[in-house]
Image 1 (tube, one colour):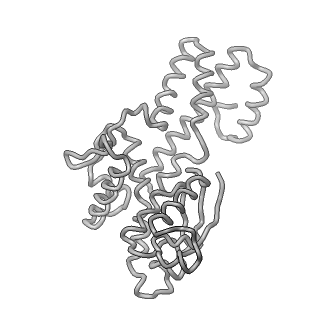
Image 2: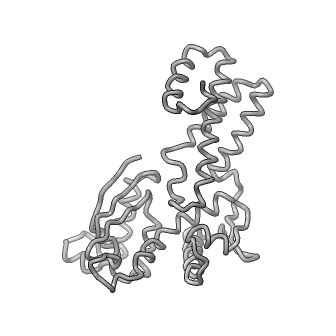
Image 3: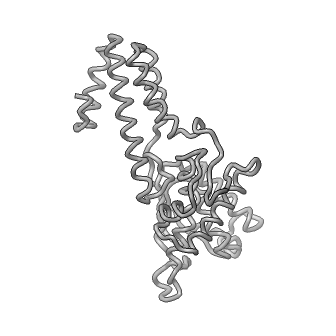
Length: 271
C-alpha cells in the first residue's frame, strides 16, 4: 500500500484550462486525462490525500467522478470545495454530498460480496448510509444507474422484488473464491492430498493484495466480511504449513513458520 498526496484537480472547472495552461481542449478531455493518469498510478489499496479543490463546475456531474478514481480518497477541503468550513452557512449540507459521491465503489463491493443474491433496498440504505431516508434512496438509485452505465450491456446490476443484485457467478468474485477455497483445502488435507492442498493454499494466498476490501469503505457493514476474510487467510497459512510439513518440507517451513508466529503471535494454530 502506498500513500499519495495531490491537490487542485479542479475536475469540471473549464476556466482552469486557461488559467493554468492545461493542455486540454475542453473540460471533458481534462477530466478524462486526470482520471486516466490517476488510475495508472494509484492502486486499489493505496490511500490518496487530496489537499483541496477537488471538483468545481456543476457538482452534480463532477462530484460523482470520485467513484472512478482508484484507492481510498481523503479530502482536506480547500477554498474552492463547497464543503469547506470557511464558506460558513453556505457549506451546510455539502459534507454529506461529498461523502455520498464516493459511494459507488462501496455499493459495488456490497453487491459483489453477495453476488447473484438480491440485496433489499432497505438493507442497502441502512448499511451503506446508516439512515433509511428518502434522500438516501434517491442517491442509491443514482449510484445504481451509474454502475449500470459503467457496465453497459448485458446489464449486470439488476433490480426486482424491492432490491438489487449483481448478476455474476460467485466464482467471478475473488473474495468469494477465497472462502470457497478455504473449505476445499481442508477437504484436500483431510483426504491426504497434501501437495494439492499446499498448492491451492499458495495460489489462494496470492489473491490477497494489501488491505482487505479497501474499496468497501469504512461502514460497519463491511467489518464482518473483513474479519471472515482475515480468518480465511490465517486458515490458509496454517493449512499450507501443515501440508508442507507432512510433505517433508521441514527446512524452509521452520523459518517461515517462525516469521509467521512473529507476525501473528496470538494465532494459536501457528504455535
